[in-house]
Image (cartoon, rainbow, N blue to C red; front, top):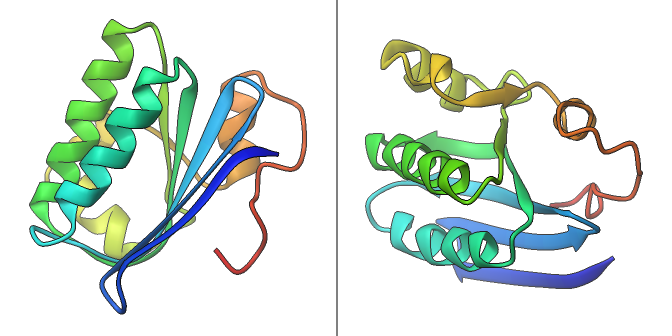
Length: 136
């Protein structure tokens, strides 16, 4: 794996971990995605979009997601589409993520996957090693 970055933004708020494998990048989130932390994630996603890689956004570790998080996902999805890239959001059945996406009907706009492996399959990537470790 190359370009692995661990970035703990504010202890207890949002941790972002990125790693690239081939034409994909995995961005793993843990904590709360809200108005205070969305700007940090926006910066990370903008950087990853500039790499030209498809993005797998793992939200299974989120405890909370505010509307601003959904807006950021929509904006990133649209920016990726313009660049002929893809964004896949991994939910893992996490109610803190799925419930707001469904209530706002954002789930029909985004590409969702239950697992990282499912996201990789949607992108036609059969290689392993994208999980960045179990601890996130």
